[in-house]
Length: 627
Ligand code: AHR
Image (cartoon, rainbow, N blue to C red):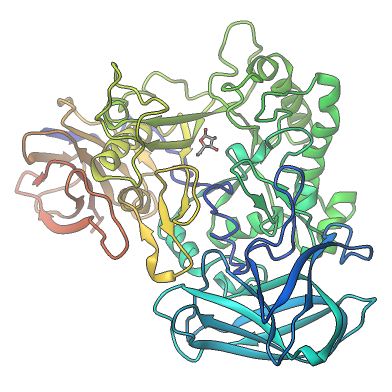
């Protein structure tokens, strides 16, 4: 292909072109980014996910039982683990962790637990291997507790050596003679070092992985997880604040209880730590079982969304702002609010169009006229019969490669008046399917992990979005994470388990990283050339002063030669080409990153023309930096 990138005639692009979407799915919060290592630390539950002692096991013939306490640790944490009986010098219980524990010699771990019961002596906490019986780390905690009061104890330990895997458990043991009567335990917590050393913080390697994408917005909390499965459960932000003792937990929509350790403030700090603009999802009055609220019933929840915004942004003179200040945090400015999630896809669609969205929109825009309000599907203000709001929409695209790659021009005719969010997208199946038409369907086999030609297809879709980046706020792949041990949705951007060495950055991760790390601030048109099998977007960066071309080659018969001129770039200028390739069907797995990065210096000829080739199924960024 041969074309010239013009020096004018384009558009300023959105500063949020690439971001992150997060909801607790696939144990991406608990057992994922949230660094807590003990699973079922506080015996939380509800009629959907009943409380239990699961993930806890007796040591030394003790009996473990769930105790519904008459004097609970807190009004939120009302049940505890009762440990009774046992004899000998080593009785107690152990925890499985989130399918194991990492033992890393350079880490200092911080632990704590609450205990009630007559105990006087040392309680030992050990991190040990399941098969090797190796003790990696150990702490001895001097406990003097009483039968009628809860007391908290804290400890730290550091492994003496690394474990080769996460096949480790955390043991709490004592001499039976130290206790008289049963002991009750609650909120047993263990944290490794966290990103930026935040208390109650996030797992370092996963935060570093996200940071590698240089994301500029953070859509949270949802996805479906903001909605709740059925009345009365929804992602009620007020239950996620303050000390962990005050957080009762939430029956997540993906088959497991959420501890709510990862709460509203933690989301804001996460956004802050990675330099992302928060895009706050608020509950819209719809449950996943299809129940939606009447306009009258909706009012308290609209007020709750306003309270949430006051909590985040208000100063100390406001009731909710004062509560945030009391927790020790300054304001968290909010520029984007999304109302609900995929309200078009359920029985709640008609009520969303008829009154639910409008009710939230009117209330939020009256109180916060500068906030961009995003409807949870993208044509909400664009259909006959509904009023036109000054709102954005959220477009989700899950597709097969053939469909995704054909959508390069999808946004070409969209309006720039209400830029939309691509809040979720992913290639989720291979092209091989047995239904007519290029469309994914539920029931077809899903790809377990992102695979290369799917990632290239996503790149073409994203290049199309970047080309229209005056019409699009930005895009975020979904879901972001998958714990290998319990997942509900595949494929996902990043995989992991408790062993840090097992984290895998998928083929789509590297594709997004390449496109996101070089940002175009002004799109520029190119002279006519045939699109397909090569696709591209071109522009300039006001930040670096460079000229940029991003391209992808898909389904070609071989390498595609490019002859490119940039108006304003003279003879013999130097450019840097970076491109990614991988075997077409390949996915990255533990210890095997299939994506190869190639960089080449490309010098313009005497006419300022840059000549290079891109292989079949490749994604590239070419940058000519101002001399
Ligand atoms: O990303 C997984 C799910 O897909 C989200 O929760 C939902 O919004 C979509 O249907």
